[in-house]
Length: 406
Image: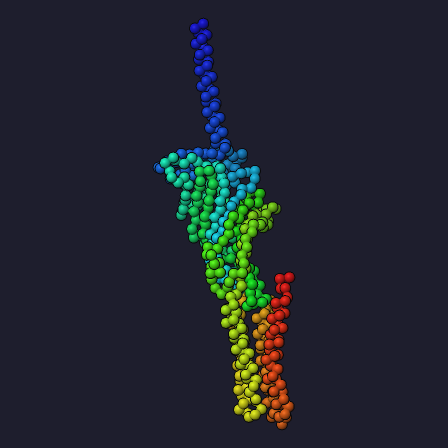
């Protein structure tokens, strides 16, 4: 009996130990599978080491299925393999400068914040810590982003890769990740100069997912704003802002049939009135007044009056052509006629008509036809202002009534 009781006691002990080992193993396995890789933070551990331990432990919970997966870092996989990861996006524009119509480019300084949830990065903060966030700046950011999954983005139609001024990463105990980036970039835009200098241009800033299509990532625009309460002051140059809009959409690439997510910011701008007045209307008005005044010089009275009439008209023609060439430096070379071309064409045509009239009047006067010569000169000086203004108004009306975007 004693041996039997002793054997039963040994059996119960062995079973208890086995049950304890199984229960403890199952509990540890369950905790790891839930993605709560909780690590108590100690003051001696650096934040880089903590995140490194998090990613290494997560990689051990799901072994690779084949050799290729074993070679790939587990940190490049999205948080949820069954549904797209929602990335919340915040965009703030600092300045828009160097808007160039000939190059069809502009410079932009902006800030972008990306936020998403990654349960694999959850941790238990040290009870003595007042701030549980893990924060990384400077060179540590590149190291951290190389160990965790992050939604890489690119700027659409940029001339060269954007210049990153500042970047930081923060991770909350619940696995909430926040990436902040401040950058400068040069971006292309489609310029329409049919009605130059009355330019209504649209600057677009497209923030696109660089690696993950919409089956893996979706963008959710939370906020978009200018840093300044007066956005027009953030646009440097002779431009003012009309309106601004931001929307989330998708764009197609050859490597995905369902497209990639992107956020498109549209900024409608126009030339400032003072730029149009001082660089366009005022010079043309001076040329018009001078041409009308020269027309009142009678070249038939004496030979001395013919010279100012002809030389003055020739000078105005050359001045108009020089003004047109100076404005040509601000507009791109296009294969269509712009409002500027038409307006200066009308001005040169009116001046040439004045020159031909003067030469005709002088010729008739020299051939003893003073009456006809005087009638032509008097008639022209009366109709010249109305002719010029009428032709100019017709050209402007035509360009503003045609829908050039069709």
